[in-house]
Image (cartoon, rainbow over all chains, first blue to last red):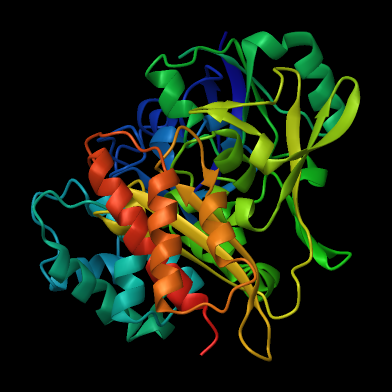
Length: 159
Length: 285
């Protein structure tokens, strides 16, 4: 039986009626319309569904929505400014041509966002380790690492 | 996958829920195994009991020279804990080699043990460190040694109305050294083909091996201690020849299967290679 829950998503309290076995990814996409979070493997392997929960990267496709209550959830939609200006990470992905088909991109950006929140100046190795489980089927990894590194070099601009 | 989601705030509440619904319930912590298995209908619980809201199941603390780790502590926190890194670095290493950071941020040490995967990363170090687990059920609590906890893949001695609440690691002898090595094709995000943990204490005077413990992952129905190999080293001055013999003995007593990650013969050979490397790494220079 569906039940009402409250989720704090991108700084806004959202109400949703959910089945208790639903995952966070499903609720974000199908109930809240936040379809920037992608579902691909649904086994927690590929990272396309990565969101930030209390500042940490989490795989929303295997994360029970009930568990997300009371936590601070940030999705890809939460990064751009209210005036539509891109977050430095998003701009860096554009500038470095770090997007090919684009399906892994929201997960990559959110993985990088959590990484930079915890470690504003990661080394190239730390960037690779932080994104190790985010798969890009286009194999565009080099430019993704470059994009994140370019922001890490100017980390003062990152929120 | 259809279940009701229960979120006890205390251990007493959790135990009462297990007493009522144990056989049709599953405990969830991070859910990185359970949700996959429920979706694949490997398990089909009516109730899922989330233990991560129970304060007494969190935290890493020193106690009596050893360490207590709450069952719901994430493997990310285990891998970055100053206490664990200083006292039992091989456990921090193993925890850092589980999946991606997105998995490590939610997967827990209790789950890694209770899942009873033969290739669990945390189990070989915990076996080497003589860890035990506190288990609570309707009749009270009991302590189980981890080396007596695993029955087979996915199977432990825990009853359906019991919950693992914390892991205890006893104090190490001074000068004890340990290391965990994982052999896999794609680093942390792949399962271990072979995992080897070793812990050793050597006499400062002549380097005699006072104590050696070797545990293997991925090469038997459960994580296992390689006790024959340990006896090869015990009380001896360890040199290259003895390390080679101990490593071969560990390979001989492993019981791997062939699967997509490697044949049984290959795994045995990798047990030999990685046990040798691990023993060399802990030998005093």
